Length: 146
Image (cartoon, rainbow, N blue to C red; front, side):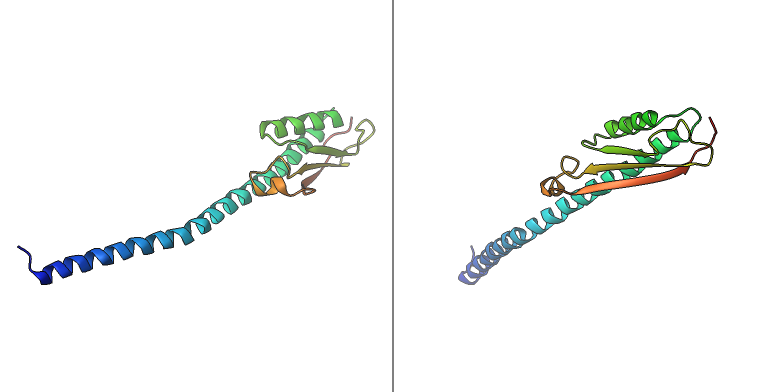
């Protein structure tokens, strides 16, 4: 049998446990939104880094095609579009300078610039930011005369 003093101790422990469960619920209610905010912010940052790096890789690969023998600006754009399609980037534009490779010689610089909007190429936040654009540019010199 339990004595009245022991009954009070048991009830006191139950009250403390009940209050502690309530405190845990309040702590959870404050912490969960912060954790979600950090998680979605991290995902969005990674998405932006992926977009920027994809544009840099695309410009590099396109420029590598452009400096080869008998390459044309159309070959550069085709290569860039293939890389962009492989990485699911939408709405990108590729600019090649100079536009015509027929009369350029060795050691002529070729610049490839790739631009893409953040709309449609982002996970969450940047999809709602209109008129934002990421870009990358690479310049290399032509290796051969035609």
